[in-house]
Each structure stands twice: as C-alpha cells, then as structure tokens.
Image 1 (tube, helix red, strand yellow):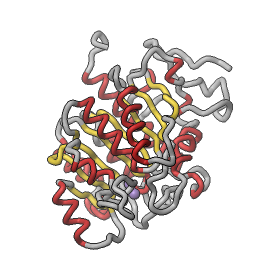
Image 2 (cartoon, protein in one colour):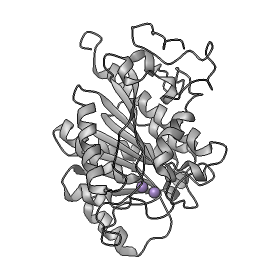
Image 3 (spheres, helix red, strand yellow):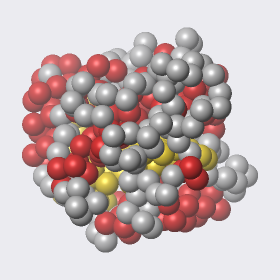
Length: 330
Ligand code: MN
Ligand code: MN
C-alpha cells in the first residue's frame, strides 16, 4: 500500500487516485491520511456512529462510514472555491468516536469530551453523524473552545427545537432547544435553513421564534433564490464564531433518500452547496453532517451528496485558515 502523498507545502494529502484505484483499500474521508499518520491536523473529519436518539427510521449509526465510502471520488481541487484544501492545510480522518448506543446521556458526554480532546490543539472538526442528537455535545465543545456562545446555521427540514419525546430530553428532535437553554448559542445569530413539512401546531413556530431562531424555509430558497438567502444569512451572522449543522434531510428525498425522517419539497444538493459556498470568509469554527441512513439510500445518492457537502465545509475552513493566518503564523 502506497503512503499518502506529500503536497507542495509539506502536508500529507490524499492517496493518489491516478496511481491507486479509488475503489481499493479501506475508506477514509476523501482518501485522506488517518489522524495517527500525521503530526497534527488543522481540520479533522471525525465520525460519530450514534443513532439512539431517532424518532422514526433508525440507521444513521452507519452514516459515518457510508459517507467515507461515498467520498472516494472527491478530487483534491475545489474549482467552485478555487482552493486545494488538502494542500493548503493538513486535513485528516480522525476515525470514529466510540459511543455507547444504550445510554444517551453517557453518549453525549463521550462526544463532548472527544470533541474537546480533538480540538485541544486548535484543530477544527467536520463531524459525520450519526443522528442529530450529536449536535448538542458538539456545540457545547465548540462554544467552550470559542469561549462564548456561537452563531449557528442549521440546515434541516425540521426545527429540532421540540421539548421532549416520551419524556426524553435528549433526542434528535430536541438538540437546539437544549442548546438555547444551556446558553451555548448566540441567539442574535441563529437560523434554520430549508425547513418545511407539517408541524404539531403553530406553537412549534412560536417557541422557535422565542428562542431567537430566524427561519429561511425551503420555499424561501425557491422563491427568493440563493443569492438573496446568502445575503440575509451573512447579514444575520456577521463575523461571529459560526457553527454549521447540516441534517441531510434538508435536501429533497430525491437528493437524499437515505435518511430517517424524509419530507417532500426540499432544496436540491446544488442549492445547498451554493448557499454553503456563499458563506465563504465567515468565521466557521465547526460543522457537522448528520442523519445519513444508508439502509434507505439508493445508488449512493445520499452518501455522495453528504460527502460533497462535507468536502465544501472542509474547503471553507481551509480557505479561512489561509485568509486569517499567514504562513509564518502557521
Ligand atoms: Mn431533519
Ligand atoms: Mn435534524
């Protein structure tokens, strides 16, 4: 097995797919080196195979590895952002967090602690879920590292600000209500994007507004277009430390069938990628892509979409590292 290749500025890049077939060997994200193969990483892609918080179809515990498998075709240059992210900064695959599937409270503690450990040296995380429960401990860690409540863009068909299910406080439908209650979100700068579908009642929206969330619905994206949406979101977030949480069910089921709680009328993968690229230059400190459930996927549609979304998140972070930090400082 050939070693991962060294890029022009000394970072270890992905395996060269012009020499080693893409489909050969164990999968890491984008064929990047494992974290234990590099000194340190500026950006780490880490899996959290946990889905004990779901309310409908289970299976997102298999999402992390599915996205890795579907990421074999990613190439090292991102023309949409004119950046070679793996050359600009060191990116590595940190493997999976070992999370207890039988105890949600313990799982949340484990994820929070692992995220803090992984980011101790300034590494930024792009996390592959897993169900949306994992966003809460990831946000706790991000907020602790930022030393302040963080801004958030939440891409999802759903609000995920419900209170409880069957009396349970920690589920994939409740992480952002908990996060607001815990004071780890900057409620001046939080917004859902892509929401749609039936709710339990109008109170869901009233509660959500009271917590401070703005909403850009799936219809808004269609009717206003991505440029206007991007302008609104940038205006709302400013230069605050920003966490981006992406539930893959924000995409229409045509673009992401492999997920646990699908809703008709979603945005396209093109729209999602365009909106993300519109966040260029913002102060992105962490991100996740969650709710990929491969048992309901077909032809890797969802896995490919999620892997491209993760790739653009990595690209945004790498781009920002170069605009905020001189080579000497690095
Ligand atoms: Mn959702
Ligand atoms: Mn969600």
